[in-house]
Length: 397
Image (tube, rainbow, N blue to C red; front, side, top):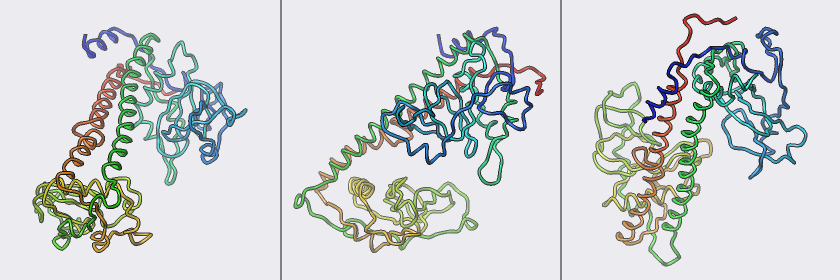
């Protein structure tokens, strides 16, 4: 039976009662805007300052550090001491960007708003988590403020939630857990492959003294910076030609100044130091480049990709000027020393690294694409499984 057929059969004829969140959950404190009779009970936890919580982080801990963002930090029971909390909880941050977190076990928390099911025979905590996760846009709309945003807990506690029979909730959780676990496995696989890629890249691009000759980048590549032409956003004519800046495409324009295969290298910007995205990247076809990226041309594909991999693997700090506004000027770029093995060796190195690159970074193939597809599949089935018919009139009393 297909996934869709199974789900239709699972939900067929199920009667679903809708409740307001305050009716089926217990929170960590009483909220000023919420009537006292709607919160007859609270479960209090010890709250840590964010910096104090993170200072407790260790490797291989068994006590979760429940930060106000999605993190994977842990500590030990010894470090947690008497302030450790335990339970099956759902948390949203009291301040900052809205996220929904689930955890079961021992934990320490910073300033989250924490909920748990008032009756797990009526409402499965993991089902509650998945439902609130599907309502993240609605929850986000309840976060207000000019600086750090805080949620209106009155609105949060008046979210309507479907309560199908508990065995249906359990089965929905099982299905969604399966998708989540698959994505987690693929993500772990991607991390391992990225580490493997970095290892082989460093091995392939490291040469013993005297093993190969070294040349400056200015001797290897033709620099076409003089042909670049920046256009202010107000003067750009919209089109389908990519307009490149320091870190990639920033717009699409009507005309082009380059046509072919080139290597662009960031000329300025914080990313020269942070390296959160590659500072060297290949482009092909018709394009326009502004004066924030150097334009380099090579004789062959292998030479271009070889230099791209090498530049992205080394520390460029010695060639960068400016602290507040980092800059890699053309003179310093051209002076970068590049190991220059034979073309045949470059082709061998590039062939190996291309395979790793496709596996670990490609959005059209490889693990990132697989993860994206699994995430889309998970969200589709999550929305399908949690789409119960609502009553025509909902009460917010």
